[in-house]
Image 1: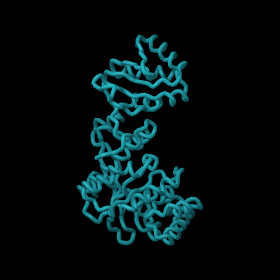
Image 2: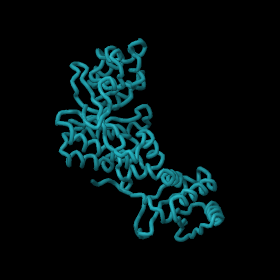
Image 3: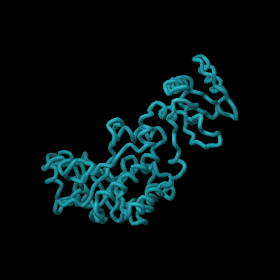
Length: 345
């Protein structure tokens, strides 16, 4: 499946090669050369680039640490570079990363391998109707597919954000979820799939692989619900609205995750007009013994009902929590109904 050059570049994880940096600060450049010479590594320059050879990955990591000790934070962001193996031609155009990101990549080769080789799978957590307790869909959540390359999904996504690999991971996770759903779920069952708005810089280009997967795996777009992760951190409403509209024109539903209460939430719902709204699990936790939380859920019910938005309570862990919110929501999700599993619960 095709995607733009920002998501296609492979980072070589080879024991021998060189790190190539674009020169942007002559003073820092000279300081780097001097520092490397002190540890016996001969840097050579040409065409406004520094070439730093390495004989093994440990040496590369040591070079990276030394570079970080020489440059300040501003310089680490101004210097850009990439890794190159002996097999690659100079004609081969590599994606250049700010040195701050390249350093993270070099320090965390296992995370890079997991992302590049797609060493993960999609687990499914059931979502039920609050009206009759029937399963209407599943949320897809990223999990390791190898005990050798285990990871915390939160740590992997956090690394990808800081290392400039977020778009790649986010796109791969969406495609993996679509493929998994096509294998396990019949048509008519909703598939809730997370996405990070900041990973989609241009919906036309960045969502190309997603729409190709929908077609390749013969998934009905009406069965898909793409939900925003980290709703409270939304900064660019115009950009997110553009993404929502792009999905909706293709017949796909959209959802806001982790919604709270108050003026900002109501304005967010009115501006973005999602098909689904998922209540922040902090509002659900112990709501049966906290009347203020239940009042906020009721407020959300009134707003979403008026707007025709389907309201979902996630993070339900006990019968008491479910009984408390059941009259005010359309859908429910949480460990009380089932944990994320490889096969549909």
